[in-house]
Length: 471
Image (cartoon, rainbow, N blue to C red; front, side, top):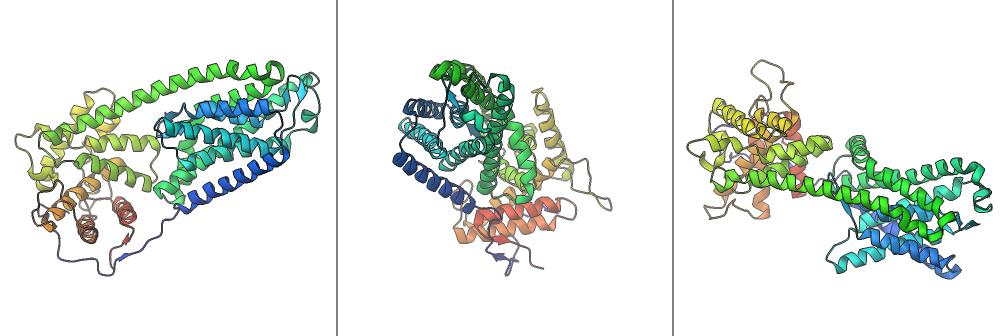
């Protein structure tokens, strides 16, 4: 168990720091982006060689995609979506008739128009000060490619040869097929988004199922609206021609406006919690930046352990507010480290913090996590306590690690006035190893071994090395 003495131990990890390759890293993103760029270039060249079929359609849909790209919505978890652009891209891929006359658009032209539309929107975004994410643009273009390929591969031949009037008897079946094709595109984009997240966060592929579930749960509402609007575009253009685009885009824009307001409320909610978490820092109860560092580290550990998105949100809020109970203390703890006070006092502070959080009336789950953060992983001669939430165990380890690391940095920086002290890269690895060794000494009772191992993996990725305890 970590005791009051926070000085770094003399021992090191001899031979324990070595290079570690990410299990699912950036090469995947580069491969997807590169393949999309090559496919788009080939499609543009083929379209330029063969000529554009129905330029009026191409220009109108490309412009709609570009406009939609300028109207993003950020869903929970920081997911950027562009409903209008996605609906226009899928709708263009599903076109089979205009004004009652069959239309056969080459697959290359569909990809070229969609790609140029997204590209034009991204360039306009740069003009207004937005930096586009190339990987996100690539997966949107690939999703449109999948929709167009699926549609052309499985659509009955008469769909491209018969007039819209002749198709009226089978129109319900056609509508269901269009919904299926658009849904395949939405599912493809969701899976690519999951792959991108795993690659950026370097989360083990074993968490794939959980992240797929979270992605579909977070985007199912918007995906349904986009799919429905894309099908309306495809079915409306045969009757209303290009007037179908503004007609059916209005409901989607209203839905998008509602999502934007919801996202704004969530952003304000999170900012309020962050501001409340800084009260302990401004009053000198904890070291500056402690809550933010613990929250960031805790979320990374939670991802490593495969926590769901709702669990990660509660974990982040609880980590930001985990020290708020210290406001009840008559005198601040040195450096704000609860490792310096007895376990009973540590638990009292945690309970007081939970009581403060419960007064909000909307953070009961967060309050429970904060209340149990001081509980040991297991007690003497007892099995691990299953009632302690995994989020509480994560915060306990992350907070202790930051306290020990801050103390180690202070000793290694020779008393320099930095808050918190900083080190050179070579000294940082040693300080991290020392702090991890302190936590490993407490794995028998205080700290969940799974959490400590996940913390080790996260820190190894940060430093670009693998931190493994020597046997």
